[in-house]
Length: 340
Image 1 (cartoon, rainbow, N blue to C red):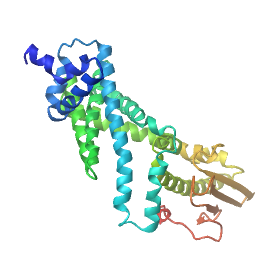
Image 2: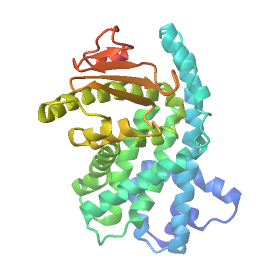
Image 3: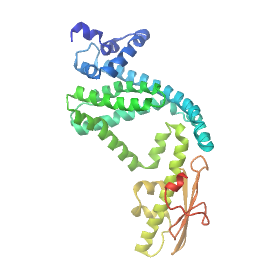
Image 4: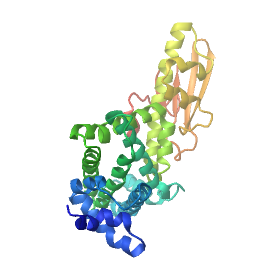
């Protein structure tokens, strides 16, 4: 590529622009270059640039935030559009729940920070992935540049219904191509660093941290409130069942039921133990345990705020069954019954 051609390249122009109008003029040619000539685009990072390293990084972050907030407003538009589209094909209850989604989207003050949150999480996950796969001596700055510019794929969310499919697949492809080009490594290692390892790390963190972290994440996505309530319901049922099993093990070893739930940590996973003993009831449910005598106990599990943090309540005792509502309520045998 000739020097004169390089100066005309959208990346060089983007990193060197000054003023709002020049930025607007170069933004969409830059998007086209990333989307349709990704190999050539990411190879430009190894080309000498008049921009300093700090300026190059700031321009990449600026691009990512612009793309992120474009997607932010597309998400809001799609919520309203999908509500109208689905009204005729859903049940009355589902249509009512769906009608609340756009309203819920504005309930959290963190909602407006969603693009920033998503960028930070993605950068962190990919950076860890690159360190694990490429080596801890490798700089994560090139990965940060790739993550920022691959966000151009969010523009596909402008396509109704199928836009998310294009956006996710194109974003993954850009991430792999970008990491391969800037680190000069093979496709497989780029795939492992950019997609596989971040996915493994994300799920490991979510599983280890338990429901509290999930709800913290959902604070950025308040339109999913109905889903959060369902998750709380299912988590409360699973926890109730786990407490029953732990109580049986405790009695088998010691000959009597525990005096309080705090002594069951040995028999429960860390996430469950933390959830049922949390004084703030971050899981949306409170666990009211009473030992009647050595051979009898009762457990009442109820939402902190009905319809806000949970829709159901549960009852369990030494028989090991989980009832809906009270001891006279129907027995729930499987978590799938919660959805019904």
